[in-house]
Image (cartoon, rainbow over all chains, first blue to last red; front, side):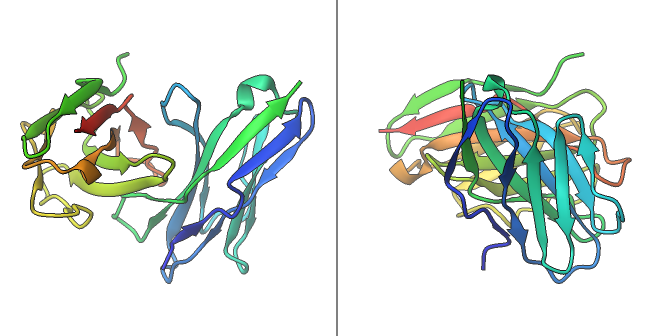
Amino acid sequence: AQKITQTQPGMFVQEKEAVTLDCTYDTSDQSYGLFWYKQPSSGEMIFLIYQGSYDEQNATEGRYSLNFQKARKSANLVISASQLGDSAMYFCAMREGWGDYKLSFGAGTTVTVRA
Amino acid sequence: GAGVSQSPSNKVTEKGKDVELRCDPISGHTALYWYRQSLGQGLEFLIYFQGNSAPDKSGLPSDRFSAERTGGSVSTLTIQRTQQEDSAVYLCASSLVTSSYNEQFFGPGTRLTVL
């Protein structure tokens, strides 16, 4: 079974608008962490934001925020005020358990920002 | 400071040959990870090393794949008798396991093409 599901293969967003990227996860662990990474066309993976399973508040990092709904097992990424440089592939990932640090990644969502 | 580096950046080989991919993690990082990204796919975990512990090899797809980490630093991923399905980008990441979220820093990857 897929541990991380990203249902949107591609999305278009107008510059300066907000966009929400969906991510649902599956785990039986109580302790886990959720990550979002950005991969531009150049190929490097850039860490954006992290949410721990015990964190009570949604994580925010600049224009990035994570809408964490634990009961629904979803961790959607919101990018506010989109910029042309936001065009990239975005991956949701999860670390499960305590002391196990490998990540399981979703298939990714391609975001294209239009001027 | 220097990030994660990988070499070579590109490798073209013939089916049946062995290849070695190298990863230099960020200095001082205790954990090192290998992932594989096939065309249009998400990242697939292969193996990870954490300090002096036995490596987690649970993601290696076959016994043709092996990896070692010498002196707690540089790592080499070896693929023996390469097959065309091994063609992918191989990404290395490292992390400093002191925080709860253990952010992984990725290298630029090695693009492997098996003819």
